Length: 366
Image (cartoon, rainbow, N blue to C red; front, side, top):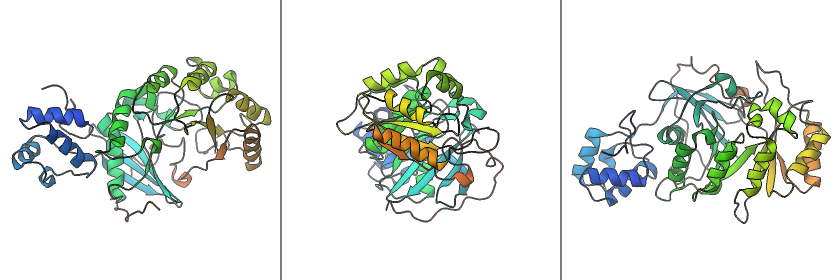
């Protein structure tokens, strides 16, 4: 049998339509049965093959005897006062990742992880303190979405956003991330429009160019966080390998739809990267790029020395960008009281949590 099944387990989660068509053929069924199985796993979120009644009984029995559809186990769940919920999910090998559910006015968002830990070592990010242990498989990425939507009782066909802004650098695990994206976006899968899926990167230039060649391509967000090469290297050592000049050139070449903009994320650190001069330089750097900027006041916590910029500085920075005709928005991260905000995921205080997880009430998309 071709390796359509993960070497680590017989879990079908993470297999795409082509994989499942091949699986059907190997089970001596017509290939269209694989497409039906795909719809049952992803669109209908069926985990019990006996309930996939459009499949013939023989195929259902064979699947039940050989395979499973397993989601990561929810090890802990902590709710924020603002409605965000931070989940600790246990993977098949005992490693853990975090996923954050963020309800907001008129929209739902899931922030998913792409690696166990992170290798990029941005100096203001708590996840960087973990280092990186391994990449996630496509099924483990999809499993975060499936497990959290099930826990939150989000019905199939409910619109929501998926952002790859959790633990890890998605472009250092590009193939599994893009396989997960294709399944999320497939109309027979979870049917999430590509405009609702965002991959955020610290700036892996060759992988940005590789992503630009993908035919099924989600939105791209770049963690900028500095206005000069020296400043960015001090905050993000990755800049030594992929300098700001090369990153911005890749951004200029990145293909965009008629109404699409690249998103640049800028974490504002008090007295470090938040001056008027910084804002002027950022405006100059982004000249000629169809873009918008999300300004993110730093989410402080223990073990790191940085402080959030005062509101007056944030507003002044925003005004300078807007005066240069660059759309700029202030993004206050959700879940700060439970360390679930941007840059705060680090498993702190969660791994010892053993309380049973209550299933949340049904959620409306607004």
